[in-house]
Length: 401
Image 1 (cartoon, rainbow, N blue to C red):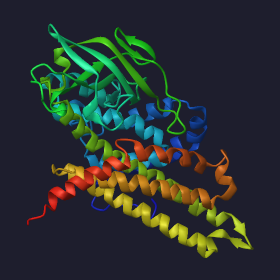
Image 2: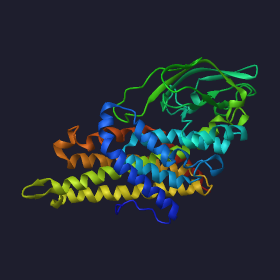
Image 3: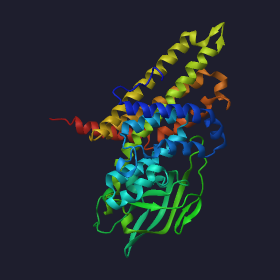
Image 4: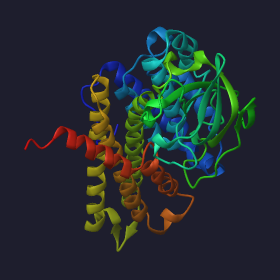
């Protein structure tokens, strides 16, 4: 284990899980990540290994066949996995947001039907809020769910589904206006539907099409897709929680878990960038000595390590707050904002330390340099985080004039 980003107060079980995951990352992910990433190849063998480790059931309660671990344990595992290859952590993250939403908000029948198979990785989850025209403005979604007898017909277009092709269960946020009078706030007329589908691309079930993978500058390997709904029929018992109009709250609860996850990814990528930078600085010689002995490089390493440590501490704090049952949107927003910004800066400093070789695809830092920007926009942009943080601070520090 490295000197940086240590987490105090972990149980023996948590330490054992983390040690196992770190060992898996060092042996099974880091040696192949760059090659798979350059080919934009789905990491099938790595995913099978994660299934065997039980990681798809990490936060699913033991009664449903999972390990019943905390958000903190999950976030620390994500940090380790992202240190190896950030795309792999994305494969797990969307799965867990859906599992978490089912655990917190699903009916007993929905939990019993989905969670045991999600724990083994047999059912793989994805979730879908965003649409081509709205970005972070979730209240403006236009995809509709219309009641037809004892079913709903879903119509619309969704965007940026991580695991859109490989998943078999998608939690989809739609607008459902029945029972909501004219003038109802937009977020009170949204519903989450649990949509089952076959993995793959094209028309994966009648009325549901996954057109194909979106080509991206980084975050490769994992499939990011659109989703087209054209009168897709969903039975009423696949409304998450059994009641319409609760979708916005359910999704926001899931996104708080997702934001801790993105913070953890930022921490993992930054750690790896620091490891690469500090190692290369001791191997590369200029003016008769390793560049690590030049004060300019030592200053860079000092700043990088401090950022790694600070981001990790904020991420751990946000996870522990959620685990305690308290509201954590402020802490999750701060952790996601800081960790993603610091990740970008640490990666860039490691890139600079590598000099011309940082620009070469032979060196791992080139991959990290393309991956870090995704964290600035995933699960809500930095600007959205600052809006959330600002509003919450004004609630907490309301002027008592």
